[in-house]
Length: 346
Ligand code: DAH
Image (cartoon, rainbow, N blue to C red):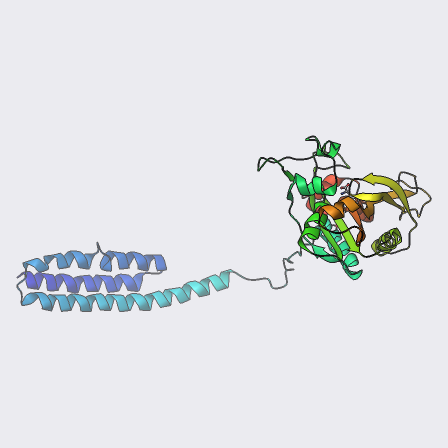
């Protein structure tokens, strides 16, 4: 009796499922039917719950029947799925028209930061004069940043108001100049040396249009036999010619740096008014470019190099100042505010 009932229920479920599938018009409706008949809580599962009432011989028969019903429903489901998908695609295709005549959304190319561009340009210039390129740490020790550079312990630059001290150790600071790389390189290698090194330096400055606590420097060091101040002048004059694309007059004013003797500040004729005076040069006709000098024998000695055999020159230039000059930028803060209106101009 139970056998006849279950067989009947299965046949009826098959009928209903197939006709529902035939009527369904969307993928969502198909899915609903699938769950309703084939799902874990669906009609077939609940019919097969009655299997327990059947005898051992009857059970496999009903099992086989149930499998064939399942299969038929599944086959019809797959057919309807494919058909409905096709319909849905053609419906979308006829609705969504693409206007191939509309202008495209161009992908905008970015550009290098002006500081990166200038660094690359300077590096290229010095590379062309036979200088190699070194790299050094921004977190430095007082030893490399000051002591080894012949800077007395009471020098005002060491003051906390000028230099950033860290909590990473007693004498660990953010480098205030790229000059410490002179020492690191000399300790590591053997003369002759001829390299530039550039990167960020940090000073505890009040921020205004000309000063910012982070800025960039490029440092150069040349150590060889019988190096003269004339060679320093020749190198820097050539650098300025290549940088501004024309021969500009230069002058070397005496200055003081602890690690060079003699030391000089290099001015060049204002590239904008060629010396006659304009706003950029403050009507002076000259522009201060960089510090330089002959490496102090005490610095060489400290790095284990015999000053009787070797001599050399060094220079250090602030890159923001140079970029402001070269590109006509009036405020150093532009380099650090990530304003696209500024950055896109380079
Ligand atoms: N380090 C110096 C500064 O930050 C710049 C400088 C001057 C570097 C003279 C040098 C040099 O190598 O010879 O003010």
